[in-house]
Length: 141
Image 1 (cartoon, rainbow, N blue to C red):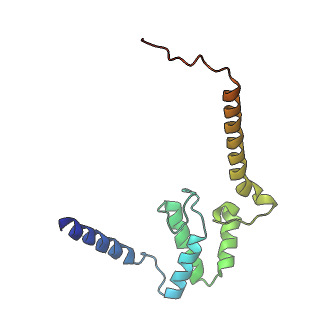
Image 2: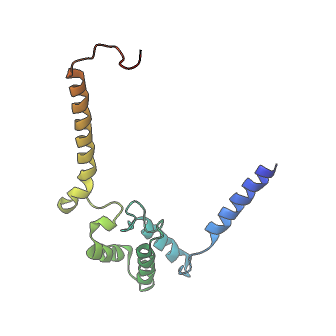
């Protein structure tokens, strides 16, 4: 019973914490939703595996402020993205375009995967070609 009450308390506390608006949230709910959606499309340059919306890095906080300021100024999503790409490069986009200047971003994971698979195959082939032992265990006996 105590565990159930404790679990319920944790769930309610977590929902309350998520319901709090950001300190710099836009007054217009549509604009705030637009800012949040845009933040999910942009990568945190410090964390690299997280979007700006998820990251707590100081640079991510600054970029979230910048996005909201540019939305207040009337910039479109494309204008905001273009500004950030011109400043930080295509790497800031969670899904960068597939073009000649971003081939490295798209292809590096596949190259690393293929290299790893090649090394694994080489090790297995080499292990099979090595002469087998006599099948006895060495040690005390």
